[in-house]
Amino acid sequence: MNELLSIKDKIALVTGRANPKLAENVSKNLKVPLSTVDIKTFKDGEIQVYYEETIRGKNVFIIQPTFSPSDNIIELLMLIDAAKRASAASIIAVVPYFGYARQDRKDKARTSIGAKLMANLYTVAGINRLITMDLHQDQIQGFFEIPVDHLYSSALFIPYIKDLNLDNLCIVSPDTGGTKRASSYAKFLSCELAIGYKQRSRANEVDSLQIIGDVKDKNVIIVDDIIDTAGTLAKAAKEIKDAGAKSIMAVCPHALLSGKGVENLENSYIEKLITTDSIPLCVPSSKIEVLSTAPLLANIITCVMNNCSIEQHFTPF
Image (cartoon, rainbow, N blue to C red; front, top):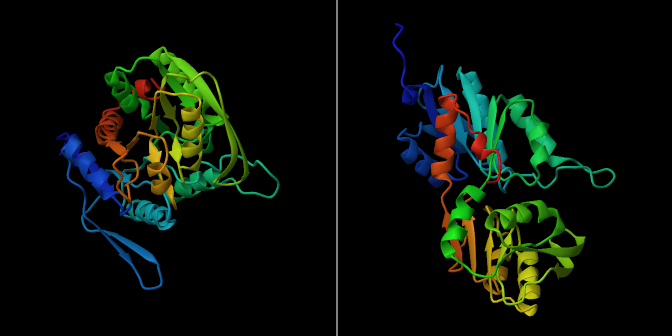
């Protein structure tokens, strides 16, 4: 039979338990149903996965962000392994939030490089391609020996910001590490830039933070890639408010909001946080607005299947 198969017949769209709602929305955008997978957790914590339908010869797209707990990582690895053993034609991991990306280098003696370890695990497990979004550092792509499609949430945030029609706009990076990202936003929006200089004594604890730049009477938008406990964000907002800012918002693709993250956000001078559904929000907040990444991910999956260029998605704007 030389009859050509449709794209729908060539795809198996799969989700783990990390963010099934996102997978469902991607499925709706693609008009491709999710494949049925049985995932069990035994009493001792072991995870077992089973594809309830054949995926032989199909291109399997596994949608699974790898935020805490680490069960999400193990689940992804098991889904990859099961797909490989079920004779999938190719296995593409769709990981909107790539866990351990903040551990991207050896910054002190006798420490691990978690991002490289994750890259090794997924590759050895059997993925042929990775689709991810807003890696903490772009060079993490080089940890893989397979194609990596690195997307940017700026495709969602920039139109949103432009629609706000804010005057006296100023983009702020909450730390020096995000200067390049914030500078790109400021350049594209033709507005001013300010930078936060922070000092830490330990992870998740900011000792001091100073804002470098003029934010007086400005409508400020803080741009970051990951919000963990929201401590840095809250401190930056206070400094910005004390410096005379007119309004303060924040955009960030990955809102982990660990520990007292939501409480810190609620008690801060941040008026609104715009984030994405790369990970599900565990605790709702009136200050948070979520933009869907499903149309973007569906578009990329279509491009991959059709061998179309996705060059426009490799750059922030």
